[in-house]
Image 1: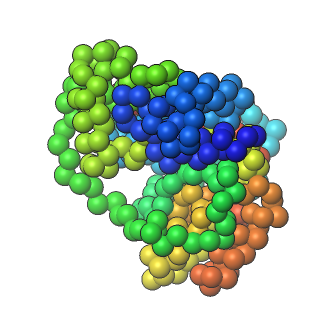
Image 2 (image 1 turned 90 degrees about the horizontal axis):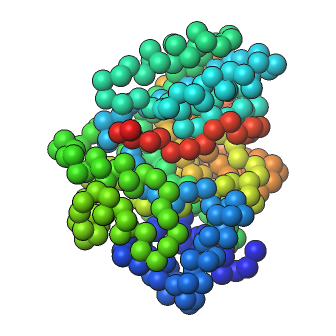
Image 3 (image 1 turned 45 degrees about the vertical axis):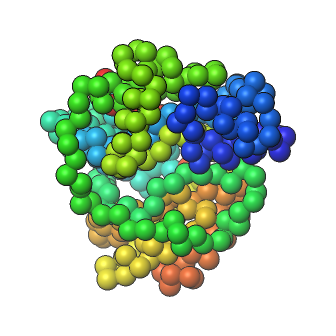
Length: 329
């Protein structure tokens, strides 16, 4: 892949400009024309490297409930079970992983709908030996940015990105009809054209300036994490993606969570409730690497740096579903 394409992918993951002519802005940063930028981004989509360019919203701050679910499914039935689970509109990620609990998915439900009831209904429709319900208690990091340019050391730590986030919710004002319309539009893949936000604003019945004002308001409130591209991990060279789970003493959770969150190779770091004795782990991290050996090496360094010896890792074996939750549809 050309260096220019790698730079584009790196920029798009960080933040897509919320301006009238975003591809002109991106092109200027790299030193190419707007038309060339558009053509290259289209090619990156066609070649399967970019999954989506859209808003990334905070599920809970939009009033939705969400949870990570793990199920123990007979191996010969896992594909059929995954199909049933994928039919739920709130299931955004669904993976087979290398563990006794071999099917892992995230599920979200809108305000007024009971998430656990939906999980129970799904369980009744498939063959399940055991289920783990693992809501996020605390988020230390959520920042998926694959180092496609190989400019960052995966073992490097970034203290500035390590910050504690608790479940305490802001007192946010109710969403207006216009704001909900903006969410519905911005959650979809944008068109790769000179002025992709013009059509969005027209459909809502507002100006581009008003659209950007609402989007920036969402960012300031934490309702929108950012507007950016999500890449396909394997196609981008990251073929070893492991969910590492750690048994951390309760008094050390905050310290260790912040330590793990600082690692460049870690995209997600959460505290979740342990369910001993079958599941003693309370910190979850997602680690992305180019090879299995590199991934295991990163986990070893993380273990030694935090002094946490009891951990396990679950590699992604099969991707059944990976989409964004579609809100207010």
